[in-house]
Image 1 (cartoon, one colour):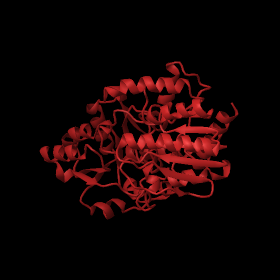
Image 2 (cartoon, rainbow, N blue to C red):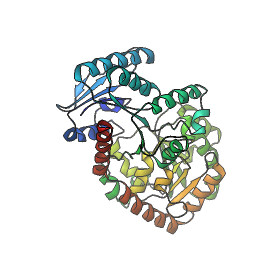
Image 3 (tube, helix red, strand yellow):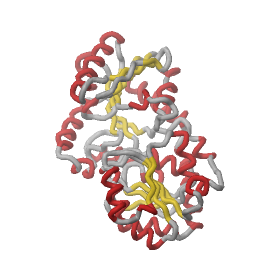
Image 4 (cartoon, helix red, strand yellow):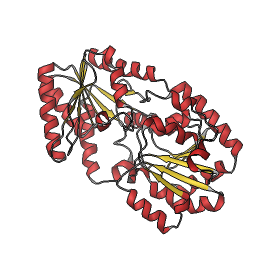
Length: 383
C-alpha cells in the first residue's frame, strides 16, 4: 500500500528530548507493513525541513506564511504526491479541513479515503457550541464522512454518536492510539517520587496534564480548588501544559489567592512524565469534550484513580465507582466532591488505582494497536 497522511503532528520535527508525544515511533512502526507512507504536516509560520524517517516514510512540512497559505501548500503538495507516487489510500487528521482536502484528492485521483474523528466529535454539543464556525464544520464533516470509505474513531462515545446519526458499524472503526513507550508508566514506582519533586511540602497531589485551552475547562477546575484546599490539608494541584488560556488561569489563581496550592509546569518531555504520574494521588480531567485522551490511559497505567467528566474515552478506561469517577460535563460541584472523597480515603485511592491499572493492562497494547491500524488500512484498500 502507498499511503498519504494529512496531519498536524509538528512534534515530528522536534528533537526527541523535547517532543511531548511519540508520533515518530508510531509512524516508524508502520514501516514493515506498507510500501510507502508520505506524511504532510500542516506547519504554518514555521521553517521546518522535509526528512525521511526511513526509506519508506517521508515527512513533509507545509510551512508558509499564515494558515491559509500553508493550507494552499498542503493542497499543492498532496496533489503532487498523489500524482507522482500513485497513492492508494489517504488518511486525514480530522473530517473538515484535512478531511475536505482528502475528499478532493479522492475524487480527482481515485484514492481510498479514511477520515478520522479524533478529538473533535462533530455530534458533541459541547464541541459545537464553543465556536459558531463549528456549525459549518459539522456540515462539511457530514459530507466528508458520508463520502469516506472508512471513518476512524478513538473512543466508544464517538463511535456510538456516529452510529446514532446513521453511520453503519461496518463503516466506523475504533482504534485507540497507544503510546509506544508505555512500559515506563507501568513499571515506574519510586517510593519517594512525591518528596523528590515537591520537597516534602505537600501530602496530596492532584495532577492535570494537557493543553490549557477552553476545551479543557481548567478554569472550572481552579474555581473549585478553594473548597478542596479547605477540606484537604497540604494539597497541591499540579498543571502541566501550555495554551492560550494559561495567562487567564494564572490570573484567576492569583485572584483566588491560592498560588501556594497550584503549581504550573511547562510542557514535559514524554519520557519524563512517569515521575509526575507516580508522584500524584489523583488524576483529573475536567474537559468539556475530548477525543480519546491519552492522559487518561497513562494515568490508568500508572495506577492512579481518575476523576473525569463524561468525555469520549472516559468510559473506555474508568469503571465509575470502582476505578475512578465520571461526572457530567460542567458539573464541577460533583467533580470537586469526588476529588475530595478520594483524597480523604487513601485505601480507596489505592484500590481504585489497582483496579484501573488491571483494566488498562488488558486494554492497551502497542503492538495490537499497530496491527489494528494496518487492518483498517488493508480493509479500506481491499474494499
